[in-house]
Length: 320
Ligand code: BMA
Image 1: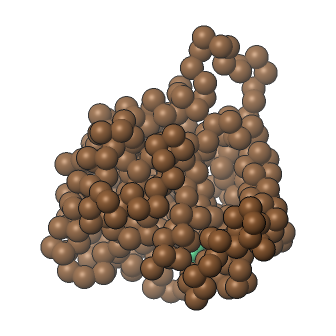
Image 2: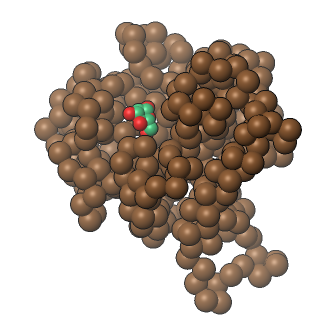
């Protein structure tokens, strides 16, 4: 549905390299800029392996929240994810917490912690619907985009919302000029034409991605992933773009060998820079997509971690 695509577009991931501007280390003109260095390193990682990512990994997990150094992934395998994503939903409302009740100050701190690990940070933004006031999944009105364009009644409002996102990113120590943009459709790509229907253009996008969740049986998911990866791999190769599985998972991870038996085989044929599974909700019992100690797939996740084809925080430094 149009609006769904729009909302997906509004959740464009922005991958940032937030290098606190260390004195005297700003790149001179003949040196590569931090943004160019990040892109070069993202292009190179598939030769080494696929970076593993987890949403909200270091801000909360199963049975805990806001612990210093906390991470369900690290508790299971001893290392942090190579990629951690955070969502800025409801920053537009001017409060101090996100739509998942995470203080933005905690997110800012964890962005810098992940940078200091040499890992990647991905930011998504699930804003309120600027026309109806509903949440980011409210697709009841088909004139949302029109209302936020220059002549629209919500143009000024949405511009001020974008300003709040911009101010937050700037607060992560000079990240502003080191942003890499990912285009991530909310539905699995079936063909190039439908994938690119609302694509903003190669001049704006650096990473091609998509959302894909396992809901049906394993074979259906594997076939669907292969189609989706083949679509973005073809576009990526033709336009020199990085590809990633920007959001995936199997809710509740009910398959005890899902990591080595499904996720790895689904992607290992393609030059995927990273794969990111969604959050381990602390407030919704079955709403988790990553491992945690004692969970049925935890032992298999350790095998996934040990596999040389997967990369975690200690395997990479994207800023060198
Ligand atoms: C959705 C769900 C929601 C959450 C939102 C933003 O997929 O996990 O519970 O509020 O993402 O994180």
